[in-house]
Length: 83
Image 1 (cartoon, rainbow, N blue to C red):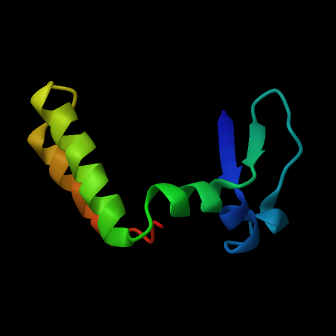
Image 2 (tube, rainbow, N blue to C red):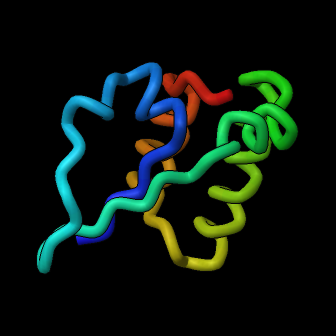
Image 3 (cartoon, rainbow, N blue to C red):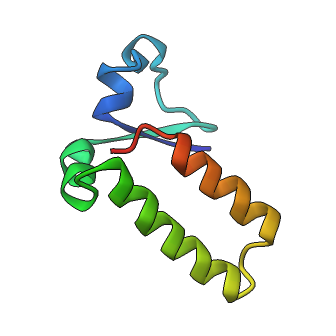
């Protein structure tokens, strides 16, 4: 399993206390600067949701998402704390 963590996961969610050493079954990658990148890409939550909906609608129209998956994904985006 590959686990990817950002500095928000480590600092805000307290992931540092749950860290495990890499082993044959788990590799953890920590990405620095993700919060800054998110803020640059999506200055507001409304920007994030609008861009997410656009991308999800394209995936829906191409057949990569079902309508139920689209609805669920959009609801999750709307409820998220991004950025």
